[in-house]
Length: 99
Length: 382
Image (cartoon, rainbow over all chains, first blue to last red):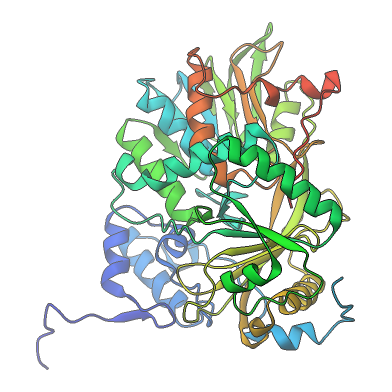
């Protein structure tokens, strides 16, 4: 297997284009709380709502802090579970003009 | 954990972090900031984060104007290594009734005296500013190009980091359960981790300030009111200003990241701690937003959340000392417009706490105004 080039990056959060290297640099600076990582880096804030990146983040945090994975607090999963167009939502209620 | 502190700030939102920073920057030592969860976990991290100077009272206009000036240079002032993402794309406030037109003109008069660059725009001019604006029923609007939006997480982080550099100890995941007072003065705070003795407490815990003040028998007229927000998927830049309608009770803007953040107030909300999102909000928000800004119908909602306004009877913050309890200061009850005045509020509170003359008057925000029946009404809030 070839050595990884030091300029190579690994995307951890695909929605927001955040690399594992960025996440690690935040963790090294002492941000070891998933809530804070999310707010400062936008990891898990994209359309997939962290479905892809959260398990990876939890692994990173557990490893960096020496905690068990089950001790890492998850962030809140928010509705809607899948992105829905505003136009569709607007159609779902009585819509009085200019009300 | 600290056993004693000279100053204890309760609340890790933008207000608490700004106050802690300004205190330390003025040379105060041994400051502890205590936060129940993580920084920005309360109202700050849930707000729309709009920043505007278009208010209807001189005091609020001045607070906001000075805050905007501070926001403009905040990254330098705090030596922040990131960006607070301050975007000055303006605020377009829509008027739909004659009464609103009249009020907006009054507001403009006050704003112009204070040098705020706002102006009246016709529906046609409003459409030039936001080309896809639906002008149906619109009588006009006011526009201020220097208003804008900031990233609330980064702004708070910037204040917190700068405060830490100046020696402030920030204790997250530490809940204050009780204030301790004796013979008319503050003695300390009880946290879940133990007691911290202190002669000065600055309470800026949003809606939770009421519960904490109650532990020493002080009744704050602050009630929580749920407000909901949603954010859409990011798209190419298409809307510069925040569009706000007091008539519809809504605000909507595209943040630098590309997503549209929009929220809606509902005066009939039960006054309780409720962080749940509702599907009714999604429908109502979508209906109103796509009426005013039709092309947004094609955007997908990624996420919705709820936060609490810490509402006072006149929808104005309470700033200053609490009579009858020496060492107890308040910065709470921001009623939905705390974020945008946080820079100046932090500075004024630090001045007040250290016994310096304040750069702007704050006595109209004093706690006793409710008892006196001397409410301070701001006409332009949503």
